[in-house]
Length: 472
Image 1 (cartoon, helix red, strand yellow):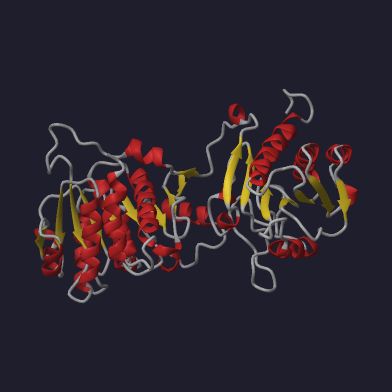
Image 2 (cartoon, one colour; image 1 turned 90 degrees about the vertical axis):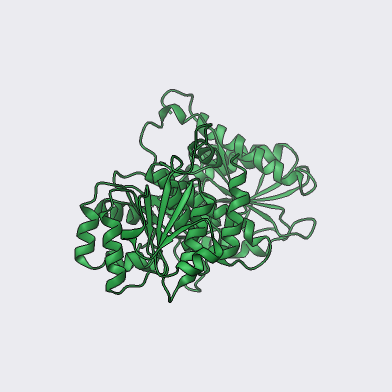
């Protein structure tokens, strides 16, 4: 800010915000005569909102501003708003096409105060000229969310104590709350406006968001000399006579990946070979032969025989993926000690309850910090499953997956994910990238499967193939 004329960054932000609002209004009959309501708090967030409202008013929109704290409204923004013909109101108009949420910005904490919370709850009742519900645009972040963690406090009624936006226009850089935790769905569609901060953002990102271009760049490519062994062989120690489906699903996920061969070791050999005749199947890890990575845990059981198989997997000097029952077995101190002594990469894939068993406490409100703590303690890459899956590394890097879908909240889909992840490790992809890629592609497969109605784990395994075919 010291290198620019006063107010330059705010004007850039307001220009980007007004442009996005104008595009939204174009879909509802145009900017001219559109009814726009500004919910304006104190500070710069309110200033961004008022300046954007002034730009819309100069284009012919009927713009009203409700000041939540009139004595602390941004003076320059308020003056510009009035000069452009905007008017102040003490209650929302009856007809509203577009609402700008400028109540609080990145400096706020602790949810919305009572008046703001009531306004946020009432937004769903506003309708525009065409009778459709008013479009809600959050300025920088939806008001009320915990910006650094993505946590959303709850009101007394149990609903989120924050604004639910259709679109969030954020400035300079994405904020964690826009991509992780229960706050992310409240942001709606997120648009980043470049206000010139990039040369000054010299620190390490708090989060890295996996994109399709990353997956394309990281995906192992075949060459003229490629053959099944050079592509990598993945071992799968999952399932049992009691849970054969876990073996079938995890092997299916592994076969969809980039490796050239799958070796199965476990008590579901007959079922695996019936579904996947290309697999080499044995009864024990010790008999499986050479592999470049192991997947272990899904449906394995938690008895002594299962613990012995896990010990054999951990003794192999190759990357391993540990899921489901393998995580339960790690609560045994001797197995946890064996895990921490390994030199080869480890990826663990807990959901929240498994995380709690491993750590003695839930991930809490800061899922990124919790994931990184567990990664450092276990000396492993941690893939904490959820709607916005978080991946943490022992050296403090964090990735978040943007493709998650509630459709994946069904039994067996995690088995498919573990198999795909093991296939990527066996193909030589570094552990953190493999975890980020697997979560991203698994999420896309879940979305693809959901187009046909309720999703089952076999649907997700089947959907992986057309998704991966896009990689070429």
